[in-house]
Amino acid sequence: MNLLIPINSENNLCSMEENSAWALASLDNGTLKQLDTYEKKEDINELIDYVVVISSQEFISEFFIEGIGILVAPMQRSIEDIVEAYMFRELHEVTS
Image 1 (cartoon, one colour):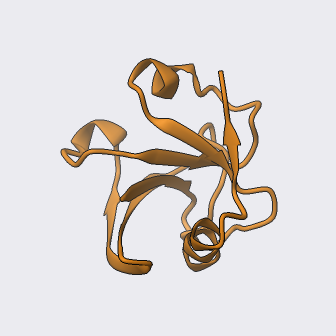
Image 2: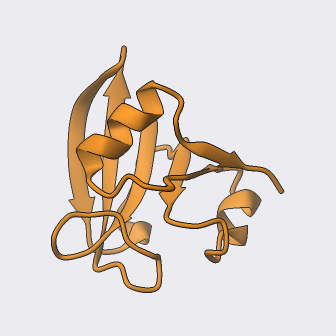
């Protein structure tokens, strides 16, 4: 399972308009297996299962078109908190 997270210079979730990089969190059996950082989304060659956004008001249509699920982290900002919230199903899924 791969989660794509727009991050700022402090490695915290931010809006896609303000992000300085993308974190790709690879999860396996409920644990964070690998965490990679990319400057551009286009540099990622891995399959992305979900993108985590700060709000459902973000520009997310491109992810819907690509068949990528959208999750909203209402309070979580750190990557660790986002991964934990995903494991406990605390992130809200956006449907078209």
